[in-house]
Length: 293
Image (cartoon, rainbow, N blue to C red; front, side, top):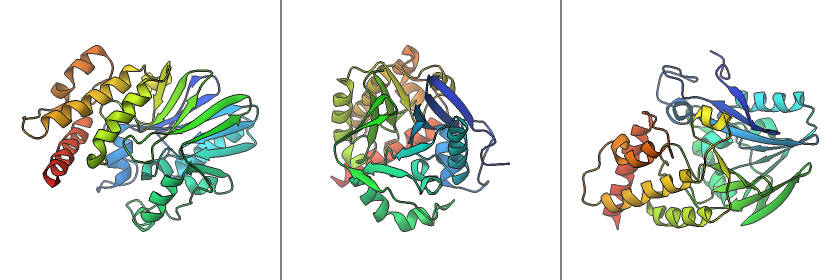
């Protein structure tokens, strides 16, 4: 089937669009064999975003394929957008796969993201499916960068959560956070187990912000469509990491539905069974990291 056959365009707020795909039982886009697209982002649900105002657009991540990126660009141009910039949340494949569609645009990223992409370029370009050519960011920053999209203020901030190069978008007037993979529903994917203590500290720092709502890259379609998550999502992700850190050395660790039962019951996160595999991976990675100390 066409790669974008299950893509939906949501508008959780005026001028803010979510391009959501995945979380569809029995559906695969690339192949029946193992691959990063179907077995990762698409299985768990993934969204890229665009902020639009006064003929300008800021695209936050370029989605999981060139076809998805082409659909994003076509939608924006159909809205009358004549100026597009791209911001990358971090270097992982499901956030940069469509960069080539925006090769003629400014692609903004942390300097650390550019370093990670360069270091992993050969693996990314020969992955299954390949991202070839990998188009690199052409404007780099460190720490913080302030932008305007039409009349809207947008701030880019570095948070070393999930990946050392995590980069969130903050709309201060709306108190809205576009979070990338710094938070996730229903469990964060631990990509850098050796840095989980840093991730926990950074989640505490993020929690101090006056956040009204959160739009993550991986979450529930309906909740994103209706405005996103509250700050309890940050608390749930931090609690999960803290609990896992405490338990991983000695205690038996049950399935995610039991391990995160309190947060699920409170509605901070919504249980989604495919995340059991993420949880199992997290436990294995944390145990391996503990043994290496």
